[in-house]
Length: 289
Length: 289
Image 1 (cartoon, each protein chain N blue to C red):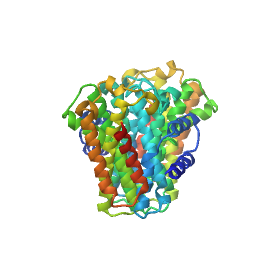
Image 2 (tube, chains in turn yellow, orange):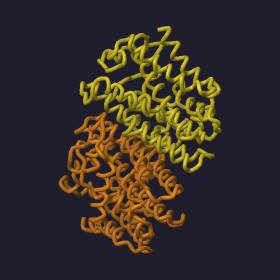
Image 3 (cartoon, rainbow over the protein chains, first blue to last red):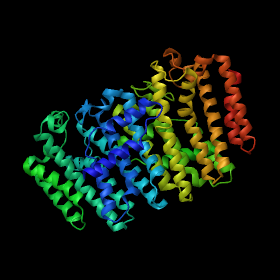
Image 4 (spheres, each protein chain N blue to C red):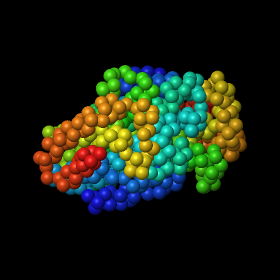
């Protein structure tokens, strides 16, 4: 897996060159280059791989999805959103480049991602390219990330339109699961898989995304600042709606376990060391906690 | 022209339906529905029309460009950017919906625009569709709007990397001209025009965009709040780099006139009452002022 992460890091660097105005490009690269697990592009590329596709063809789209993820992290940290000064143990983008440049860098990543897909995806058919761009726009915007973020902020302010359970589910289907769905669907489309298989990987994205969020909520409850690299206990302090606050720690763990088992059910049909490893890592960590 | 504006307004309303979470969609629609001249979609559609294309085919892309324009207006008004409380004589988006929702609504417009192009552009070939999406991503992002905005903000803070003349030119090629270029190129691509003609309309976008900005700078100097619907004299108060502040009023008028004449040179090759009317309106207003 480390080889794949290294490849992604070198491609992210290659695809995004510093240009004028350098402050914009430096701000874009700053959060993009913070050390991360690159889970979404890894899962995207591995999906293309296990479905018999050519991973070179899907590399630009996989990196574009990481750019979209980083875009959402920059926005999340803004004073008007979560107001977090740290990200991955480093100063948040707006603390280094100022709020205006952070907003514009986030925007520029959001738009450069599909530009990159169009420019660099040699080997995709026009139909595949259009489908990937379409999935990108849906999961990135008003029917994905932005919707999840608005509901998240409103729920923190105590404004609930739906029940707490439905609200929590909506937030994480649209904030966390959206990008895993996008990554896995894009990987399947990149391998020119049929609709049934694309849907199967979409399902995997939903299960894994929700499990990942529950993992995050559990970890936020039991971890320390050093381990997570962000302000700890923040969720609890702001009375944020989380799987732990809503269902309690034991029920959250059970939900997590059920989702992880459903993930195994799907990937057991395929021979993927990497997807197995990613899921096992979460699983073991929670079992230990 | 009013018929075309009415058509665009009804399509904008039709294309963007209120969904959950309604606050997000209301914020998106709020600034989109402020009364405007819809210059960019009008010029896009008219270009398709005079080049023999079918305007129904290009309507979604034309409306998408208006969404991109409105996205940039919402961001421009934010406290961390121009910090303007009013837009088109009404409260700015963040004054009505709060800063977080304004940022997310702006983002959602930026991403919904290409989603709309993919979903609704029946009649474009795959090649045309991909080309239009590509032009959109370039002019909207780090090589267009966002670059112009970063340089604009930095120049206001007194940070200049290039000369004042080059800086001013860069800002407005990327902020103002970018969307006219996008509109006119998209219109030409929608009519399946050849590359020479696409480039001609790109040139028209540059000339018209710069003329439009100089017009705006001149008007800001000589107009009143009632006429422009925004805080007047703001540019002067903040010692903003403008065509008037850099070259003086008379030289700015001369530059404007030269650019307008170059616009006429291009559109005289075509029989377009609407493009003529748009250019003449600016021209007469400056002649009167």
